[in-house]
Image (tube, rainbow, N blue to C red; front, side):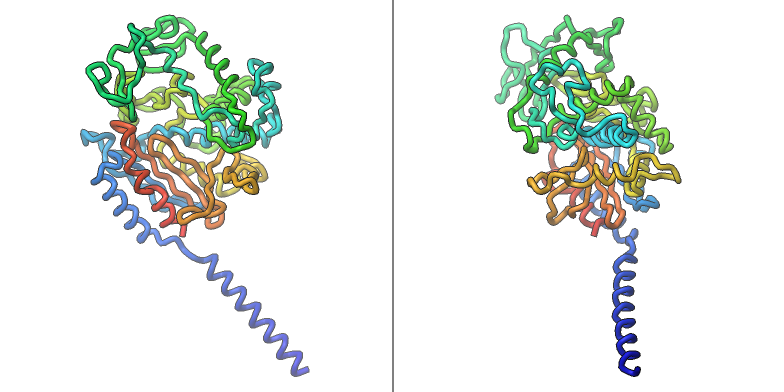
Length: 434
């Protein structure tokens, strides 16, 4: 009896030890002060070195926003401080916060299936080489489609037929655009472009409208964009443009209408396409000076040229938002699709989209969501997305932390890659995610 009692006590002690260690592990608290000091230091250094003119940052958990701060100015004139209500061009973060969230909702409502084929849903692609691409392949970037097509460049020409761009600076090629110089004699194709409003034309910039007949050439080019590497990972803007077309065909609604359903259910208003329709010019941060297509500093209109051609509403880019609104989306996702007591997205759908279904093939990608091979900065279950303009958001469902960084690092030019060279956003994510 005595031995039995001792054995029971030993088992109890072991179990108690396991229980205590579990509690200790799960009770690790987020040190707000330490992390805020770290972030302030990183931001101060970034602003001083010219990584970007200003930024918004949000750090939080599935239950609350722990840090929400603004840094710097709208641009380097330093006339307008960054405010909480200011919105940034999210660039490719739109792929997730717009089109992918809509896809998740439609999949959960059984209005579209991951194995639906492009040609069966969108008639224009029915007899093309890409007709049997599935929604799953589009969302995982395994279609083998080209990374992108510069549709807008076919709207431009020069009187003497000389190239639009040159790698060498000269009297004709003066202004730098990325790593090329722009021909100063560029003219626009007036068959498709108008510089005043016209019936049925689509506004692509504040002083530029596009003949919708041009979209026929876009669809033809996409239909021929197959690289014959299907099944392998190749990130492509075209994939999410096609996702948009599939969802619009299935529902009979435009993408901007579809995303609004999600945002309205979440109670967020500082997010959407074509921001000048729902917020003031003062609350929009400027992006790049474009010496090539729009010949202006872009503000209030999408920076991405493909999304611009599509009227600012595109599966690949076009969303503008502030960090506060994106925080709500992060909390919803970390709560398995639930927010403020309402199930916005189906739990099983959220879990399916944020995992890496092709990891056995060495593809670290979710459905729509960016994931990374575990390294010094990222853990296995982290998911999120980044944007060309200098935007970043990631979440960790294991510790329920999220980080949002919004910048306009392309202001005044996309040649500024300092924040990427420094692993700026990844360093902050590592700090708050450990």
